[in-house]
Length: 433
Image 1 (spheres, rainbow, N blue to C red):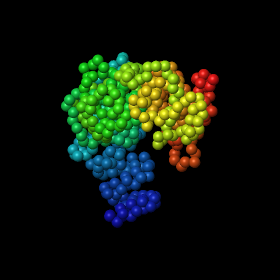
Image 2 (cartoon, rainbow, N blue to C red):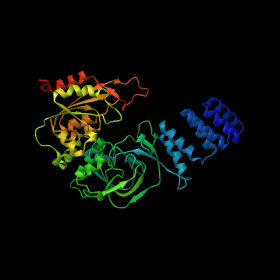
Image 3 (cartoon, one colour):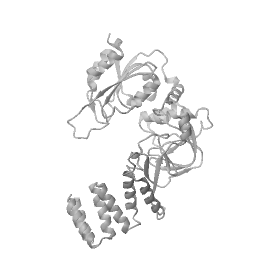
Image 4 (cartoon, rainbow, N blue to C red):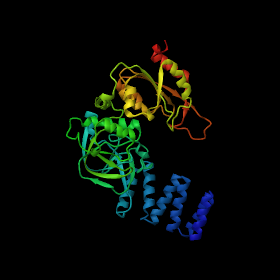
């Protein structure tokens, strides 16, 4: 048997999968319930990425070996991916009867609102949850058979480290594979969350603290990522939030909270202005109050993705019009706030630095440069509308076609400089006089 399995694996490693599969099927005719052969069949079909074949292989293995947890997990994920949620749930219920404590926990959960009635009536609110788990990969909240995502951190849970694609086609049901709980928190705390992305940190995390103002929860400890980035620390310092108030958690991990206060997400919400105006009030000492005079070109030359390939050409065309270039990633938070709050016109490629539009004065004109692969993201359009800014987009499909990589949302691109100048002329003709 050992030699046979070694031969099958060698054939597979040489990409002679048809030969490996044929030899394996022949062996299974002799020993149809042999666990080693059936597990090898599952492994081989998984490599071939044939979902139907893998489904049948897992079913066959489970029929012979009901306690094979890997096959049960794989089968449940496949059933879920085809929309058979109830079938996946039944498979996992059987697993629960045989699972030892040291095996990762599988949780099948459905995306839900924390309080549907309050969500309908108030839009945004502060919720108090008891005995829930928080996973710090995407900061989703697990509550029995429910997961609170859209009101917590609003991430694509399909990509979560604990989900890894195990989701229903409608992205409403997810299969989490969770490690042991790393920490149990008995004290009441606030779900702040953390994000290394500058924009997400502002729009997904900080501004929802506005909802705590005037509540009994305003000074409670805050759950946050332990690997704080420089901009996170700077914002916390500017907001007067001391380090002792932070409960720093490793990522990814799972914590249990006895009492969790959740200010719901304000990202791209009609009431987002509650958060942006609160943030402006809190940071008023660093916001310029005089008439806006600056024309800013926001450079992405420090970025590693979605770079503007002809940025220097665009920059050369803007400088004679009175524009100055800034690289927000190389600036302190204070300086970013100061420069954006003095801007009358802002031109730049879609990127995290545009979260600083929060600090731009009403009436500022923004020209966003974007690619066709990223133009569906509405975040800055929404933010500009909330802040009372003029906003236009110039969309490009001019990619570097010499590169072998697959094109996607973060692919570098070029922009037609003439189109940018034309958009700018329509929005602010006085610049050209």
